[in-house]
Length: 191
Image 1 (cartoon, one colour):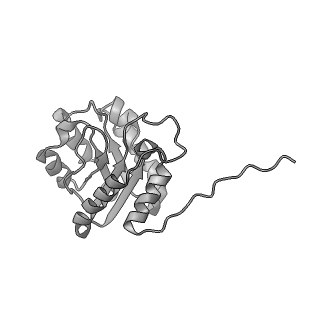
Image 2 (spheres, one colour):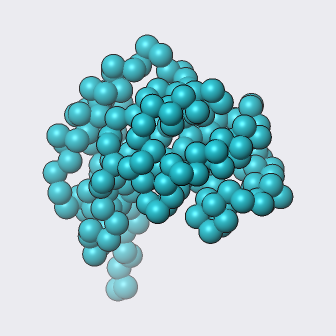
Image 3 (spheres, rainbow, N blue to C red):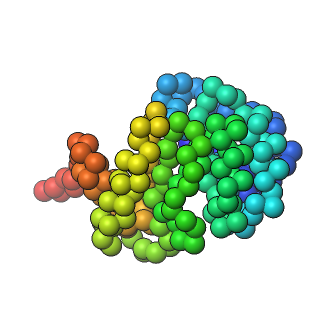
């Protein structure tokens, strides 16, 4: 699940204690099905706000998994990794234009977001570009970290390849997981 943008984008973490508590209370109902809670920041959110982020994340519940995705290039410095590691918050890696793919391992989980370029495709009904090279690169990167993590999460957006389920199935095939084809509904005959 992703923290509402009203907290991360609009308020930029300022005076949001009531809203974040309400959100965490709600998603905690997912219990063991709750994997990771993502804080995603907009491309305009620079590391000039590192102290704001640290003040916020140090108050987060320690019994839940959190990940942070930064989209401003200024965050890709060692200080970001140190800050997140101090609080055992995952630094989410992302396939997103303009930021490095590789991030420091800052907790015992990996979270990779296959986002792509927003608005790249008009329709999202089929895979429209070849993404195997990227997926194979990510599998190699995961393997270099796999002995130091407990869980791995991947998120696929339709803007990555044109069709998130197809890209996810490709990745599952590459890493040796069973591929599940969705059972799409078929139109019934009128006559």
